[in-house]
Image 1 (tube, rainbow, N blue to C red):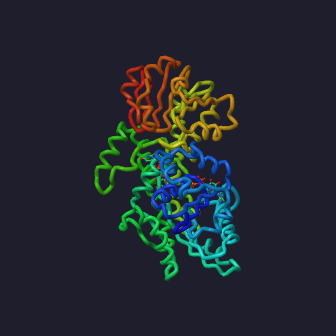
Image 2 (spheres, rainbow, N blue to C red):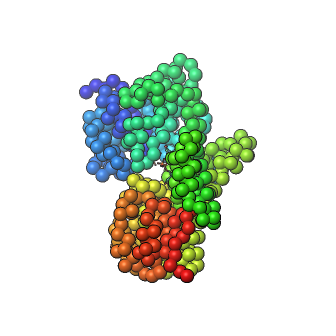
Image 3 (cartoon, rainbow, N blue to C red):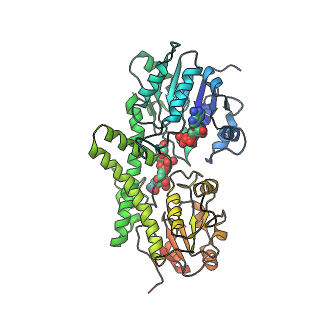
Length: 459
Ligand code: UDX
Ligand code: ADP
């Protein structure tokens, strides 16, 4: 079968995989190929156990796979035949050298740019999908234009706003699709070609054309604003615990103001995920590199409050369990950075678990989707930590339950049954405020919600 256009995506991760699956399902006349250096990952994409857990993803993949959606490790072949290349390789925060802990590690991304040059023999449109520091497109352009073959590459920024757990819905019904391009005829045509893909299912009014730098910066700013709301309410949760106010009541009251709105105001043990911290630190790094110290400091405080909130949660557990957790079994209910995903990147669970393990607690980590990742995150603590998908089994002989992830199923657990199998006094630390605290107290637990008065049986 001949296809109208050939799209390649380099990087078959959380962004590339679902995005391309939706594009292929919506655009049957385009051939969509997703390549990755990780052969195991590609094999998983070609099977029934996809490498990432995402509601509705398997159905979308099955709809298009083998028809116009292909997963492959043949990166050169993919580049050669593609008209449009999406780059969605990982760009984690640097862990070494200049900018370590702040700037993005662009080694995978740069390697990709060189591969594109090496294997191209005609003009192509290159779409930045990975979240990247502002003006990365310029560097990409420089590498691409250096080619000795005289090939024209147009770089377009099309940042991804999907959230994990709702990726398919976010892709099918985006609030907006941003397409940033260079001024001039060639840039405009490239942006139109990319817009034409999304126009298959996204209303025209939601496809927004911007300049390249605005598209890149919008992504960082959108994530920074969302994270800032979470840090704001988390900072208030600390104040609530001192004053007797209830953070959920405050979220509701404040969020009822239509100018503020109700979203991203749920107090938590801290935000996680691969984007928030990385993107804010990127923003901080960029601001600082332009000498904008006040701007950098402002955004940096969002990350500081997030660290403070995780630290505070651990501190409460230790202090309330009589200042020692040595040899005590504590169940972590959830390990994913949020519900409906198996992803644990930057999960507050990692920090909480490590701190408790350093304090020589015994942990039972339970999660419906994230135990594989949790095992990797906590490698090196064997003997002190067990991984148990069944929360009831995890609770046997435990002294405390600590909610890390807001899995809906945790609300329906039989806590009386768990209490009966636990050591006393038994504690619940609800890092997501999802449980029925009064009921837990009636059962006999000492209950420590976030940003609400504690309920204990001690006189
Ligand atoms: C985020 C952005 O939402 C998305 O647009 C972008 O493309 C990628 O980054 P994601 O990381 O998947 O998506 O998760 P998100 O739903 O935004 O949650 C991030 C973190 O904030 C999670 O740990 C979540 O539990 C936490 N959170 C969110 C809160 O603690 N309270 C809230 O009210 C909302
Ligand atoms: P994201 O959340 O941004 O999608 P992931 O880590 O889930 O990040 O996915 C990025 C993918 O990119 C990984 O599967 C990784 O193997 C792949 N990758 C990294 N560098 C290259 C490269 N040079 N060529 C092809 N794939 C790459």
